[in-house]
Length: 334
Image 1: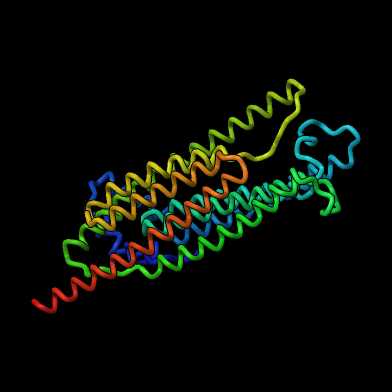
Image 2 (image 1 turned 60 degrees about the vertical axis):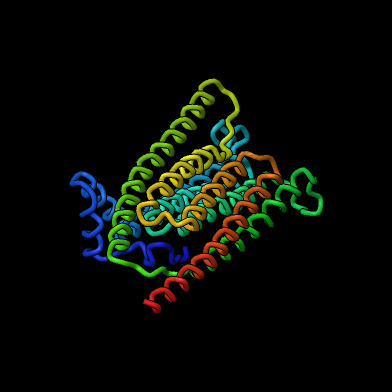
């Protein structure tokens, strides 16, 4: 995922000296938690997580393909085998969901780096959710001749496909605009406030990690329980992935972004900064709403949220450029 230059003006990886400066603004227990965050989301930790997700994805993909193959071979397959479907394309959803969850963890890692980078990651996640829905729609189509697909199946498929592509374009534009943010002159007091803000965001990110892992465990346990009950009772099972976890994810991110908005007042109460962060919260609220709306309204709402975020960032950059020019002129006069 592309690195963005945000408020911090640097990548997630920081030097040991910088980490120590961040910890000095927090109490001893808080400093210990920040140390845990630094260790978990270090380059080594993220590399280990990426390898783990890759191995689990390959294993899950192979197991899903094996169950589908078994369903083709057996005349009366068990309910669990029958539930995975008979289309091999359905197996794509298993590794894709795991990769999508990995993107959620990278979102948490990006949270302390900058607000714009975090918002970009949330836009990326919702675009991948729509791409995942395309794979789901493809697996539901049994007609080998694409020209004979019923409109009830074909239209949602093609709409999600083009909506996903449009989101990909908008995410790229958002990243490009974010890289053009103006760096305001820094004073010693502003630098100290920024270090404190980053430390606070690391504590928020660590708490967010625990919460989202708990949510993932809850939804997995709930699904497993329902599948087990269905097997015992002989009822049909539907293993189609849902967006319940991601609905909860964006609900949590709304309140997280509001908390970040409040904490950002430590650095600056400038009008343009407050407005930008508040507008980002509105974008995420719209993203959350898009996941529960019927087609095609969900995609339209998500695209509107991204356009709103881009326009907000463009105006913010313009406003910051004017303010930076004013500060330079004031400095020359003095």
